[in-house]
Length: 131
Ligand SMILES: [Zn+2]
Ligand SMILES: [Zn+2]
Figure 1 (cartoon, protein in one colour):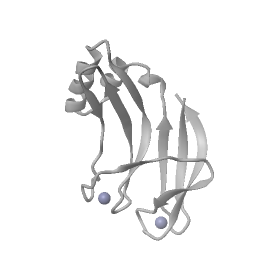
Figure 2: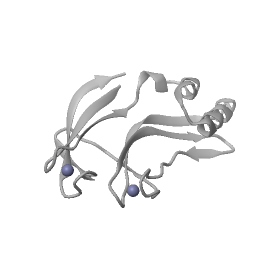
Figure 3: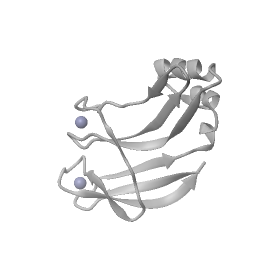
Figure 4: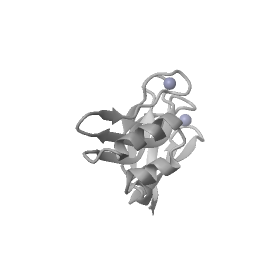
Protein backbone atom coordinates (compact mmCIF):
# COMPACT_ATOMS: atom_id res chain seq x y z
CA UNK A 1 0.00 0.00 0.00
CA UNK A 2 1.26 3.43 -0.85
CA UNK A 3 0.72 6.72 0.89
CA UNK A 4 -0.05 10.14 -0.48
CA UNK A 5 1.30 13.27 1.16
CA UNK A 6 0.87 16.93 0.60
CA UNK A 7 3.99 19.05 0.96
CA UNK A 8 3.46 22.64 2.05
CA UNK A 9 6.04 25.37 2.43
CA UNK A 10 5.94 27.18 5.78
CA UNK A 11 7.01 30.43 4.12
CA UNK A 12 5.39 30.73 0.67
CA UNK A 13 2.41 29.21 -1.19
CA UNK A 14 4.34 26.31 -2.71
CA UNK A 15 2.49 23.02 -2.45
CA UNK A 16 2.99 19.63 -4.07
CA UNK A 17 1.24 16.28 -3.82
CA UNK A 18 3.50 13.26 -3.76
CA UNK A 19 2.96 9.52 -3.73
CA UNK A 20 5.32 7.15 -1.95
CA UNK A 21 5.34 3.44 -1.31
CA UNK A 22 4.43 0.16 -2.89
CA UNK A 23 1.43 0.07 -5.23
CA UNK A 24 -0.52 -2.89 -6.51
CA UNK A 25 1.03 -2.48 -9.97
CA UNK A 26 4.52 -3.13 -8.50
CA UNK A 27 3.69 -6.74 -7.63
CA UNK A 28 5.59 -8.04 -10.66
CA UNK A 29 8.30 -6.80 -13.02
CA UNK A 30 6.00 -7.50 -15.99
CA UNK A 31 3.48 -5.13 -14.53
CA UNK A 32 6.11 -2.44 -13.87
CA UNK A 33 7.41 -2.77 -17.44
CA UNK A 34 3.89 -2.22 -18.75
CA UNK A 35 3.66 1.33 -17.38
CA UNK A 36 7.29 2.48 -17.52
CA UNK A 37 7.66 5.22 -20.16
CA UNK A 38 11.43 5.16 -20.54
CA UNK A 39 12.34 2.76 -23.38
CA UNK A 40 15.81 1.94 -22.01
CA UNK A 41 14.42 1.14 -18.57
CA UNK A 42 11.67 -0.97 -20.09
CA UNK A 43 14.24 -3.02 -22.00
CA UNK A 44 16.36 -3.40 -18.88
CA UNK A 45 13.38 -4.65 -16.85
CA UNK A 46 12.54 -7.14 -19.58
CA UNK A 47 16.10 -8.50 -19.49
CA UNK A 48 15.88 -9.04 -15.73
CA UNK A 49 12.40 -10.55 -16.06
CA UNK A 50 13.88 -13.25 -18.32
CA UNK A 51 16.36 -14.27 -15.60
CA UNK A 52 14.82 -16.53 -12.93
CA UNK A 53 17.39 -15.48 -10.30
CA UNK A 54 16.17 -11.85 -10.36
CA UNK A 55 15.08 -10.20 -7.12
CA UNK A 56 13.79 -6.65 -7.11
CA UNK A 57 12.56 -3.80 -5.02
CA UNK A 58 10.26 -1.13 -6.46
CA UNK A 59 8.24 1.67 -4.94
CA UNK A 60 7.36 5.29 -5.48
CA UNK A 61 9.85 7.63 -3.91
CA UNK A 62 10.66 11.27 -3.56
CA UNK A 63 13.94 12.53 -4.96
CA UNK A 64 15.51 15.84 -4.06
CA UNK A 65 18.30 17.73 -5.76
CA UNK A 66 21.08 18.44 -3.22
CA UNK A 67 22.07 21.58 -5.15
CA UNK A 68 18.88 23.41 -6.16
CA UNK A 69 16.31 21.52 -3.99
CA UNK A 70 14.12 20.60 -6.93
CA UNK A 71 11.77 17.71 -6.16
CA UNK A 72 10.73 14.76 -8.30
CA UNK A 73 8.29 12.01 -7.42
CA UNK A 74 9.58 8.96 -9.28
CA UNK A 75 9.73 5.20 -9.33
CA UNK A 76 12.56 3.66 -7.33
CA UNK A 77 13.63 0.32 -8.79
CA UNK A 78 16.54 -1.94 -8.01
CA UNK A 79 17.01 -5.36 -9.62
CA UNK A 80 19.61 -7.96 -8.74
CA UNK A 81 20.28 -11.23 -10.53
CA UNK A 82 23.17 -13.70 -10.41
CA UNK A 83 24.88 -11.86 -13.25
CA UNK A 84 23.84 -8.21 -13.04
CA UNK A 85 22.64 -5.38 -10.86
CA UNK A 86 20.60 -2.32 -11.77
CA UNK A 87 19.61 0.60 -9.57
CA UNK A 88 17.82 3.57 -10.99
CA UNK A 89 19.10 7.09 -10.53
CA UNK A 90 17.63 10.44 -11.51
CA UNK A 91 19.27 13.62 -12.66
CA UNK A 92 17.87 16.97 -11.62
CA UNK A 93 15.85 18.46 -14.50
CA UNK A 94 17.19 21.93 -13.68
CA UNK A 95 20.88 21.47 -12.91
CA UNK A 96 21.60 17.80 -13.83
CA UNK A 97 22.96 16.88 -10.37
CA UNK A 98 22.27 13.35 -9.17
CA UNK A 99 19.18 13.46 -7.00
CA UNK A 100 18.94 11.87 -3.55
CA UNK A 101 16.07 9.89 -2.15
CA UNK A 102 14.27 11.40 0.85
CA UNK A 103 12.04 9.73 3.40
CA UNK A 104 8.81 11.26 4.54
CA UNK A 105 6.91 11.13 7.79
CA UNK A 106 3.48 12.47 8.53
CA UNK A 107 3.31 15.87 10.22
CA UNK A 108 7.04 16.27 10.20
CA UNK A 109 9.32 18.70 8.51
CA UNK A 110 11.14 16.76 5.89
CA UNK A 111 14.75 17.64 5.15
CA UNK A 112 13.65 19.64 2.21
CA UNK A 113 14.01 23.27 1.47
CA UNK A 114 11.31 24.82 -0.63
CA UNK A 115 12.23 24.75 -4.35
CA UNK A 116 10.16 27.90 -4.93
CA UNK A 117 11.36 30.37 -2.29
CA UNK A 118 14.50 28.47 -1.09
CA UNK A 119 14.02 29.85 2.45
CA UNK A 120 11.00 27.87 3.66
CA UNK A 121 10.91 24.32 4.94
CA UNK A 122 8.45 21.80 3.60
CA UNK A 123 6.07 19.96 5.89
CA UNK A 124 4.43 16.68 4.88
CA UNK A 125 0.80 15.93 5.67
CA UNK A 126 -0.58 12.46 5.04
CA UNK A 127 -3.89 12.56 3.16
CA UNK A 128 -4.68 9.10 1.79
CA UNK A 129 -3.66 5.52 1.12
CA UNK A 130 -3.50 4.33 -2.46
CA UNK A 131 -2.89 1.01 -4.15
ZN1 LIG B 1 8.51 28.32 -0.18
ZN1 LIG C 1 19.16 20.68 -9.22
